[in-house]
Image 1 (cartoon, rainbow, N blue to C red):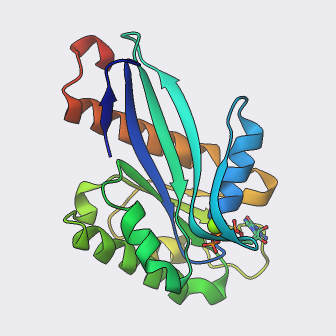
Image 2: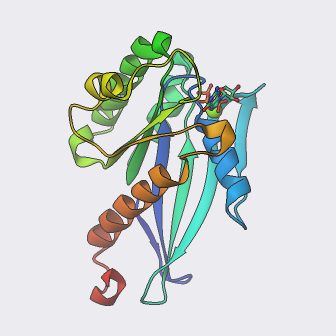
Length: 200
Ligand SMILES: Nc1nc2c(ncn2[C@@H]2O[C@H](COP(=O)(O)OP(=O)(O)OP(=O)(O)O)[C@@H](O)[C@H]2O)c(=O)[nH]1
Ligand SMILES: [Mg+2]
């Protein structure tokens, strides 16, 4: 949700990581935290290793006009019982990274999660077509994975930007975040009617 804080000269954008349970959303944020200096991951309620409400990683990017853009990068729990938390955390995202599990046995789980993302956004009065979506095909290190083409055919009829990753090895996790940040930045600056120099 785009917010403008005039006192801090800061815009705040929200990037939400979705995907089926155990696909690697929290691992992605944990590894991003250890990769980029100054980032601090906040874990809001966990059940063992499972996310119950959300994980939050604030990332700040300077803008040319002296303002800053803060991205609140969040994961939502992927497990079926936590639909309420997903609904709350997906009220008005500026970009979504959909993390898919590349293991061949998780094909249905990916489809169910993507379908639920679509209906959750709709219940919140948003259409998936109006939200920038980035796909992150995680667990590329596993032996029994679906091919890139099979993943694309299954999940990407909309031709969203797609990246492969091995989150626990810190591989491939920056490009999806960068793509989401760039999309969210364009969207936020357009929505808040930022001064022209902020867009240069
Ligand atoms: N082999 C492999 N394992 C991974 C990868 N990424 C994450 N994992 C493992 O998958 C398990 C689940 O990862 P999490 O990051 O907790 O998954 P999550 O998507 O946050 O799960 P929920 O919060 O329950 O929705 C952990 O044991 C991770 O170490 C990967 O790229 N390859
Ligand atoms: Mg998690």
